Length: 139
Image (tube, rainbow, N blue to C red; front, side):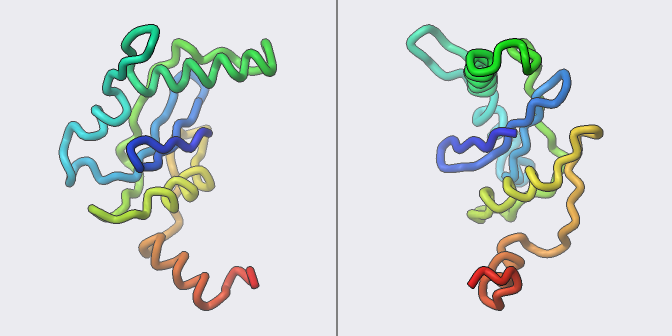
């Protein structure tokens, strides 16, 4: 799992067996149908050429892991990137993407490639309530 911030927005990239899942909390269906394609699959110019953001990110991550731990982790350079749309999304124009990404990472099931979402209320409201009423015993 790799949390990624791009253009001030968090999402999570997960290497899962034979493909890479992208978990993005933005409600792209309500914002604009092609926004997610521009964010994750849009081409970016690099010094050595042009490539999709998601592919470039995974190539670099794969190279770093192989450099540090050669032949321990399976190579995923050629894996396809796939956006998971059937996951809980943040409200339009909210700034909850980091909270959603933390909860995606906590509730992602690699066996099924889904997020088991146990929450029924807004993530921000839950976190705010917990911090105000100290239900986590942080202080």
